[in-house]
Amino acid sequence: MLVRSPEIETIAAPRGNAAPIETTPIALPWPPRRFDFDEPLLRASTVHFERNADAETTLIRRIGRQRIVVDFNRLHTFVSVARDSRDFRLLQLVPEALRFVEYVAPFDPLPEQLWSDDPPMPAEAHLRVATARLLRVLAAHVEGTSDELRNAWQQRGDYIPLFQRASSAADGRAAGLTPLTHQLHTLGNAHAGVIAAHAEQPNYAAMAQRVRNLRGRLGGNRHCPDVLLSQALIALVAQIDRPAQTVTRLLNDAETELWHPTALRDMPSLIHRQRQFEARLRELTLFWRRTCREWLSLRPDRLDWRHIEVLARATQRRLAAKLYDIEDRFEA
Image (cartoon, rainbow, N blue to C red; front, top):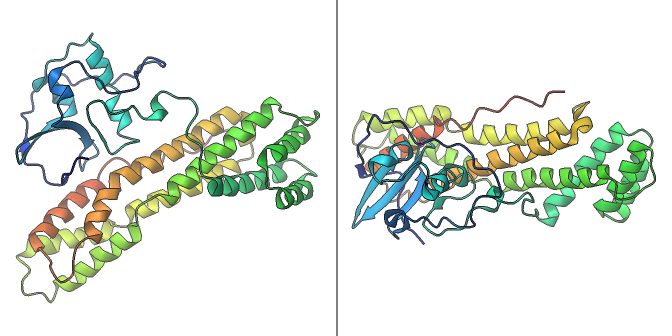
């Protein structure tokens, strides 16, 4: 396991003016199952990719106690990779992979989301919540099924038979594994993925409270180095709730789209949108997990104000990253 402090970058590689590496998606099922590059430098155990505090992809190379940081779009200044090579195509998958994993090292497996059409199955608890929510939506849209669906859910809790009943009521055919049944099953799994991704978020509230507590202590602390830290914490307090507000909006929007009057008429689009919500939530989890952990690991009896200032500046950069704009709502 790699141990590193991503917030402090010691060496920045030179930035040239050449055109950046393009990141055109590669059609499935091309991707191999691992990041098995051919270029020796990209196979080295001292190299990995991660996102910086601006949510940009970077290559990190460790040399002793130093870290060389190379912007992904300037990677050609650090390693020679031909545009028609397999390595070039494989590199294009790195930014997308970093939406699902914290870092990419040589020979790491590709995230399943990049090569499989079947996302991992959510936990049973999240499936039950998503199924109950979806059944309420169906009961509201399909006249006369509300009592039947509710009673069946309370008695069995088995969502496949329930979706069979709901789909037969919706399309007028006999109950069975109809295409609509499969779509409802897939939609239930997709919304369960949203619920699971929301449940796995870092403790943003605790991080925000820690920042506010430090800001409060700063006023009467004689050992605070200078006004820079005070300014950093004041600016941070004003924005620190942004991640928590974003994940709440994402979850609420995902549920709201289920209730859209015309949503169930285009089930594939609705399923796709639910998976987009899940992907954004998981992206935010990965982006904030280490930063939340660093704030919560600060010891009140051993405060290093210089370290807190660096952490505050890095957190401000994360709050300014382009990850918080909610995409356009579902349209009919």
